[in-house]
Image (cartoon, rainbow, N blue to C red):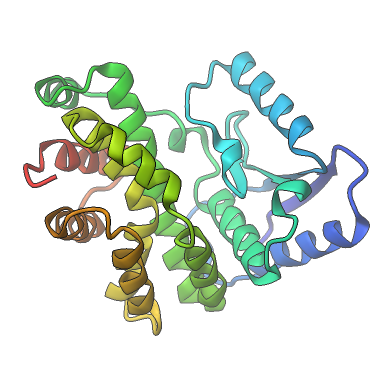
Length: 280
């Protein structure tokens, strides 16, 4: 497809791990159905330890003025903060995780690099209409920013998961979703602390959509096995009420069908729906 890849090992990383990462990245780059504007260049950075990786990430955020969550909690990350797509992978973070899941992670982040490799996907606008809705429902600008950021993660994950599945790499994405659903205890603990706060509930629901939105999208597209993961999602989020789970599923299906042209418009409509949805 013409995208040039540069592998950068910042520490003494195992050569076998580097080779495997390159293989999995190329499995995505070789997909014939390319995004509308594939990036000409992709940087893949490999870190050996979480300490060095986190030090780098915090310096980058401070230097560039980036205000988001703690992305290093993810299995791997992507960004385009410097104007081109970058993937960051930490060998220590992935140690002990099944190879199929790691393959799914690399496929997923490479898909993000191809589809979301421009700064527009990492900077968000907040219209007066959206800010007014936020204030009405108790979300000041910092809380609204957090909510929109988490929604952007879910929407971008939806796009990438569906594209990979349509191009023969769905099994690794289902494996990744299964892994992400394997432990929701921390989310449950947070939920117990904030469930009475209307504003914080909205932020939590945006976070829960990270797995639900891709699952509902794959079910809608008819991918075999996707319903099993929806059943698993309902089970592991069983500490939500039936109405809350149903409301999130209805919201996910609505977000799948937004008829807008740009990512920013889609994100704003998604945020407005989540904030104003009375059953959540």
